[in-house]
Image (cartoon, rainbow, N blue to C red; front, side, top):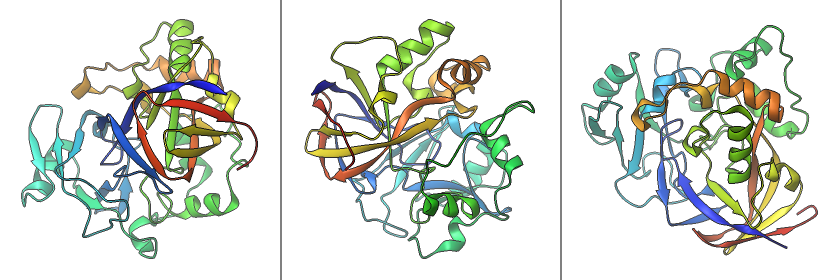
Amino acid sequence: MLLGKVSQLWRYPVKSLGGEAMECARLTHSGLVGDRHWAIYDPQAPVIRSAKQWPALLSMQARYLSAPGDGDYHPRVAAVNLTAADGTQCASDNHHLTAWLSRQLGHPAQLRAREPAANLDFYRLPTARSTEDIAAELGLSANDSLPDFSIDSTELANALATCATPPGALYDAYPLHVLTQDSLHYIEQASGLNTDCRRFRPNLLLETAHPSPRLTEQEWLGASLAIGEALIHIHTPTLRCSMPGREQAGFGLAAQPALPRAIAQLAGRNLGVNARVLRPGTVTVGDPVYLTQGDP
């Protein structure tokens, strides 16, 4: 069944930083090639940081200086160039990068490339995640209950209890994030708030064949989407934290503290869906999207 088409494609070279809009991209089992091959590392903790802890990351942008490879790990990850909210830039191979990055963020900070899964020390948290840590990351108030994570696999849940990200990867939990314009329009119309897709960092933004302001992609859970040469499986809803409501000065996006609460009230904290790649292949803006019901 025809659902619609690919409206936008995005990859994010550095975790939590703004990314690159693309016309064509290759999907592999690891996600979109080049997506989150770098991260900001706190050498004092030591731990991989995201915008949940350091919101200033949201106002920075990264782009590749050469084509990335899917199987690249340190030290073979393609070089990137970083742009700060003040317009200054610094490349990953610049020996002044650590000092520049630390000044921009107001913390001692390093840019680190992803490591193979066997290098657990790079991914490991200083202490295991507590319920208080999870509540803080999600921006929950004292009266909010923790979300139900039972839909995630035991293997993934166990990994994220002690690691900042799944070992071998720098995305939060799943390799691909899919969002529809329908959902953005629904939240915008119901709340009156700005829902620029850059607030939500999707890899694929889809335009449905019959646009309607509703949480369309939540209807696809458990199904597969054929997009271009690729086939992906829609796995779980994307649980939202406070990040979409934060300022992104480098992109002209003002702070909207009411946005996370609106998403909680209107969408049960879920906006977009997490996906895994079943069949690798090339995807292009404008490609039709077809829905196939059932398990992969």
